[in-house]
Length: 184
Image (cartoon, rainbow, N blue to C red; front, side):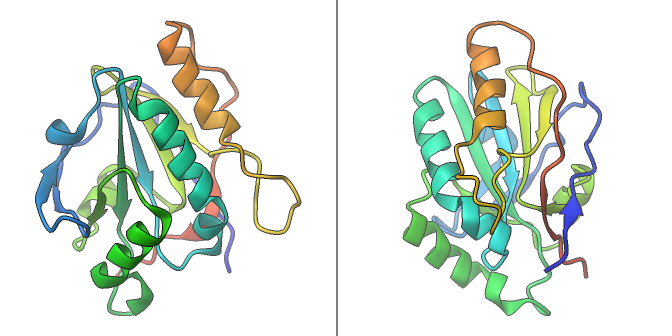
């Protein structure tokens, strides 16, 4: 298991648009269709990464807590499924059902979306405001497999709360750390 940090896309970057298939509904989904009125969280996840497995339940709690406030949540899986078959879309569906994902789980087969977002690891989190400008990127919280810190979503929750209170997103923003995206 390699430890790869986020690349930390520059704040203010406009969210690159996309149209990708949802592994759950089999529908094609675009950023514009899925974005939230208050803001949008885009998460790069994978089925097999132990870092994602460690925080999956907290990701679902955060999404359930904030979707009702007008935030959109979108998960994207960009790994090479030929060399990492455990990330195949059929297994994405299994993962989404197991954890009751309340958001679409999109398959980025060409990896163009991951490259457009400069995603480096799973999990990797991006929060865009209502105008789709990047205001937060980095970690969910300080929890990692084996470090004894429970997952609570603190960093992402603080950024979401800042949007709700019309205040500045807290600094510093720490990179996420996880498995590297499996490039073709």
